Image: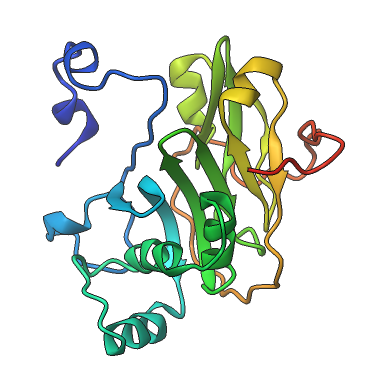
Length: 224
């Protein structure tokens, strides 16, 4: 909780505590929910019937108050004041089979601007709202992939920028991606509505590039 350089001042924390092959993080922008409330700190992490899931969100959901009220009226208990939490509740309540399908189901119910990094027990999932109000880029390392809302993050870790998650697109990274180098794409099944919002960005980052080569797509959409 605090500035990145302060929280991770001791680099040994990566060897002692943050061990693993997949991870997500979050630098908070101004969004729904109090920044003074530590329960609003992202990633938000829950465990439900399908396993563990964590989410980092850049954006603002315009219909979160309506959804939150409906869920509360049905008995849902909220732990934060963040609009991001409703996505987790919608995922957990989904009747779809499999976490990727449940995530798509949840995203088809929210409106507004969002770029998401979602971590499950065995997948990293990146998603962007259909209007593309918030940026979300994909980069490649020697032994894996990274996603970030600003490309300057890739420069810090010497990752190669390879393209953007397109508006309305969901990208799934799992062990198969690391084995064959192909990224799996899924698209939400319904049109969202969204409102424009101001994007805060570092001056060294690339935002919403237009003339970029498309990401390599597999010939068919792979199932989860």
